Length: 156
Image (cartoon, helix red, strand yellow):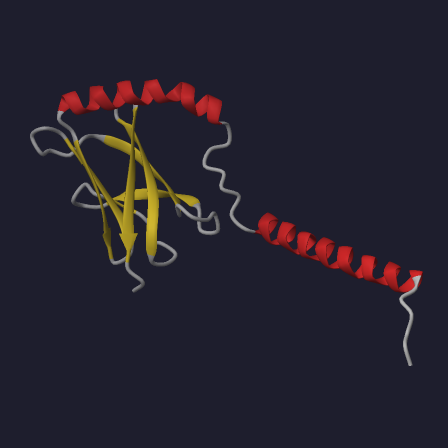
């Protein structure tokens, strides 16, 4: 028995075809919306205006011969700022902005606390992998020394 292709068959085929396309598009849009935004800064224009200020501050800092070190000790960030003679620079407060280069789930800020050696130590990082850590040190004279580090932490 031969079945005839009718208008209702064509309607069903069109609805099924476009239904699959729409369902896939909705799924892909939902997954994209729930994943990393790719946003690096909130306002790229404002950040571009601050760029020259940062370059000038970096050049002035480099002229002083200061040296900044960021290391991990037992999974915790340890920051040290020394002058040209190797003595610790007088720092009132250190804030670390910690982020992953690829996603925002573990991003956050923490205050680092001074230990008896003059180093500033933070809380344990929430996992291994690559981290971007921006250190903002409030100096005794009221100015800020801001530095950016990229560091890799082990899993343990």
